[in-house]
Image (cartoon, rainbow over all chains, first blue to last red; front, side, top):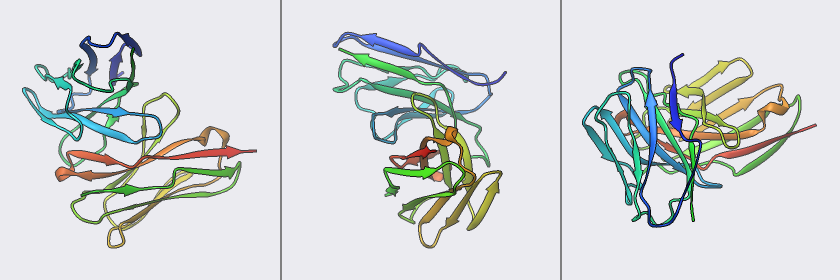
Length: 113
Length: 110
């Protein structure tokens, strides 16, 4: 079955540590996205990539970094510079062209203490 | 900008019809999306409107008026499983990005 996988579902880290969240898709989609969701808030775009080896900052990129070395993979690193890293992180992908629909992975809930 | 506004919460009765409204600034958008999100889960796609009018898909329908910057999601024959957050999102950046509203938490009661 085609889809998007994110691992792990729950992740715990100590303050000051960098952590990398995994996102893999086998939908052959060109575009991939990372969002953050906080309680009572909508999804906010962190980074997105429309093609391999290229990515753009979203609305809240500070304290985060990404890479897009392979079409299937778009890992997100939450660095120690991110002031409030505890959140629900969602990865999505989209087939570029006429369709704008984004497909979401199951999410990773990151807790930093 | 592309501010999107929708009510924070709504309550409706099982079997009834509910309409969730969404308003947005009309500049620079490419279509209007609705997603459903159950607590702790990923959003799932419900509908997409790029032209004015009503799109019907089973118990769910979505309406768009581009000139008024207004959309709504209509849910018929409500079921308990419809209790979820409903996210309105506008396509921006030439369709490459989505800007989401804060979501409307719908509670379906007996």
